[in-house]
Length: 636
Ligand code: MSP
Image 1: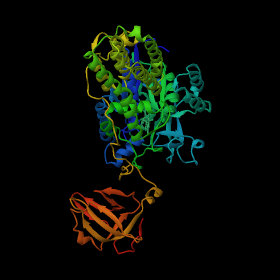
Image 2 (image 1 turned 135 degrees about the horizontal axis):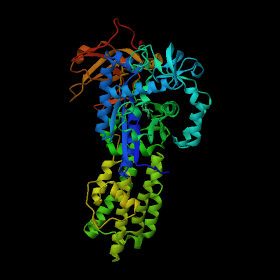
Image 3 (image 1 turned 90 degrees about the horizontal axis):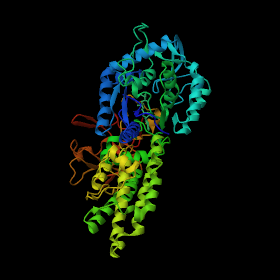
Image 4 (image 1 turned 180 degrees about the vertical axis):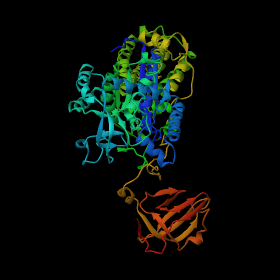
C-alpha cells in the first residue's frame, strides 16, 4: 500500500466533556499521536486533529447537575483534556471545540447543502433515545424493549418534530464502499459487523432535536428556531470544519483523512453515518476508520461508580510517559479489548524495555568503553556480519506496513526481533573472547553491528517513545529526523565513525506496583452517576458499640478501637479520629461501621472495618443511630 500524495491527516474522536479524561481517551490519542509522529518522521506533511465534543443533551444535563451553564462546564472540562494532552506532549496541530464559531458555521453550511440537495426532509420522530450514547433506536433493537443495546442504560421515549437525513438512500453506495475498499475499516475483521448492520436495512436518521436547547441551530436560511442539530452530525463534521469547511477552506487539501481513530463503540457512526454524510456533501471519503478495542479493569468495564477508572496522568507520572505509551500499544492487539493491570505494565517495563533494550544499550556502552575508548567504526560490519545485516533488513521490511495498517502490537513485536538479533549476536560471537584472541577488528564490528541495530530501533521507536528513543539516539550520536531515517533505514547506510556516549540506565527495574489500587479505595460516584439498590446493598453498614479505645504510639491521627458488632468477638478498627475525640469519651458509644471492607493495615495494625463520620470542614462527627439498637443491626 502506498500513499500517492504527501499529505497525511489523522484524527482522534472528539471527547465528550461530561467526563474527565481516562485511559480510554489516552489510548486513542496516543495511538493517533504515534501515527502522526511516524508520518512526520517519514517526511509527510501531517495534520493531526483532536478536540472536544460539547453539545447535546448529555452535556446539558451534566452541567445542570453541577449548577453550571453548559458552556461554563464545557470550558472547564475541555481545558482539562487540553491540559492533559499538553502534559503528555501530544503533537496535535489543532484542538477543535464544537462550540468554536468556525465549527458552528461549517455545520450550518453542511446542513444547508444537504438540505438543498434534498437529502434532508422534515417529519416526526417517534422512538427511543439513549442519552448516554446520544443515539436513536427503533424498539426492536432494544433489550427488553427498554434498554440501550450499546450501553445497557434505560432509554427514553421521544416524540418530536424532527428533520431527517435520507440515510436509506445510501445503503447501496455504502455496501459498495465496503466491498471495494477492503481496508476502509481497520482491522479488517471489524468490517463484517458493519456490513451486516447496513445489510439489515438503514432507516432515515433523525438529525435535529427540539426538546432541549444545547446545540447548533439550523442555518438561518432554513429558519426553524425550535431545532438544534443532532450532536453526532455536529460532531462528525468537526473533521472537515477543522480544515475550514464552510469557511475559508484553507486546510481542505488535507482532506480526505487517512485515519480516523475510533473506539469500537463508535464505529457505526464513523463507518456508516459519516461516509453517508460525506457522500451527500459530495466530498471524498476517509481512507481508513481505524477501530480499537476497550480497556477493562480486572475484566470489568471501567466506570466512575465502580471506582475502577484508570487515570492516565497518574499512571504516566508513576511509571513514565514513554513506558506507558509503549505498554498501551504493545500489550493489546489493535482492535481487541485489553485488561489494564500494573503487573502487566511492570512486566513490560522490566522485560521488554529493561532486559531486551536497556541492557543491550548498556552492554555496548560498557564494551565500547572497555575495549575501544567508546570510538567505533562500522565499515567492517558487512564483511564479518553480512548475514546479520541481511536478517535485519528482513525484520525491518514489513514494519512500515504494520504501522499503516495500525497493527501497532505487531509492529513492536517484530521490531523487538531486531533486539533479539542483537542480543543473540553478542552472546554468540562473545566480543570479550574475540578481544582476548586478538581479533579486535571483529569485536569492533560486532559492537558496530549492535549499535547500527539500536540506531534503527531508536528511529522506529521514536514515534511511540519519543523521549527514550531520543536518549538512545544521543548515546549513538545520531538525531531522530526524516533525513536520518531515510539514510539509515531507506538507504541502509551504516553509522559513520562515532563515539558511544555513556548514559544513565533508561529503564530502572520496578519491583512492586507504584500506585495504590483503585476500586479498593473509597471512591465517590460523581454527582451525575446514580447507583442501583443492589450496588448500595453490597456495602454492609452495621451498628456497633465501642468497647475499648486506645491511642496508637507515634500516631497523631489514629485510634485503635474495639467495636462490638454482635459477633463472636469485637472487631479491631483503626480510625483517623484522634484529633477529634478522647479515647475514654468513646467507650460505650454506638457507631456505624462498614462491616464488609477488606481488612487493611494502618501503622502495622490490622483494621477490620471503617467507622462512619460526617466531616464538615475541620469538624468531624461520628455517625450513630438516634436511639440505641442491638449491636450488629444493619443500616439500610
Ligand atoms: N464524542 C464522541 C465521539 C465523537 S467523534 C466525532 C465520544 N466521545 S467519548 O468521550 O465518549 O469517547 C471517546 C473515545 O474514547 C471513543 O473512541 C471511545 O471508544 C473511547 N473510550 C472510552 N472508554 C474507553 C475504554 N475504556 N477503553 C478504550 N477506549 C474507550 O464517543
